[in-house]
Length: 378
Image (cartoon, rainbow, N blue to C red; front, side):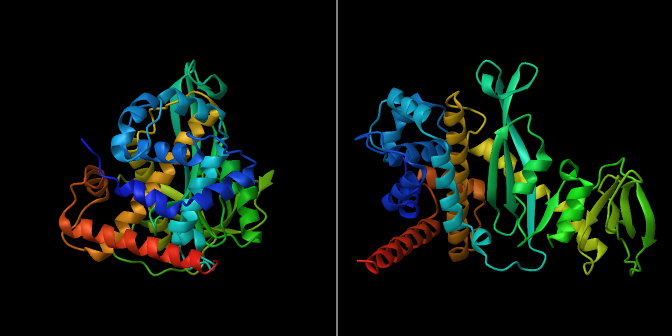
């Protein structure tokens, strides 16, 4: 069966030959191959993620029916073993820059959130001996900053599974946003540093952290509120205590467990602070989606380059699919089509006619705009 080529056309529209050439030159990568070019590799890996192909052989077998050039699976595997994975990471960052409005925003909007967390992809220790994790398992981590506003990742850092989240999270901090993080990212010195550098945050406190010099904040009590306390205090023991006073909001979750978060935001209600922390669920849903729908747990190769290339290709595929769904949804508010349903029907070439028309019009506009942009430099 011939697959729908709309997604391939989107890749080719957003990622031009000039873009690939520029990325390769920046990384000092030679793209002299006549057949297994960087474009070929990029399209194969992003299409593999979107379609859920199970490996190099599967991709080579069905790729031509999806519009890709015919390729031997061993040639694809060999190229990816040799290719520096930073090439695909740069491709991902280019696509984020083109598609994610939050990543391009020049000024921070008040209370715009940036969720930071990590997810681990595991495999047998014998498959990834360079990334031993626990026991007989190896694992790699993707540390992600994610905008719930655009439902897209803003930044990603890749590590092996044993790397701690906290130090990596600092690489993903961004003053344009309010950082929302779990306990793994809590550190007293880090909070003081954020305050000094004017980085806003909402971070869960570890359960054993001592609160001292407590002062309650005056607040209007709302009926049905789950807020139990709203205070300022210093954090830690006398031997290791925060230099600054911090605001702490305590509230109960849906199961009645108390949660303590520290925040730099003083002009926001305690209820809104609790809601900001609860927004963390969005990044958990994102991790679950890419694992279930982009075949991420099925690693094609075993080298560092092959593994990270596949993961960044999957993230790039997600951004493009999400962006296309958002654009089409604006043009066709009804009948509604979920993101999962959109991906499935798009790749099968079975979308309702209104959605097909909206996607076709959007791609036409993007190609036209790109040609106009190029002509300005002619």
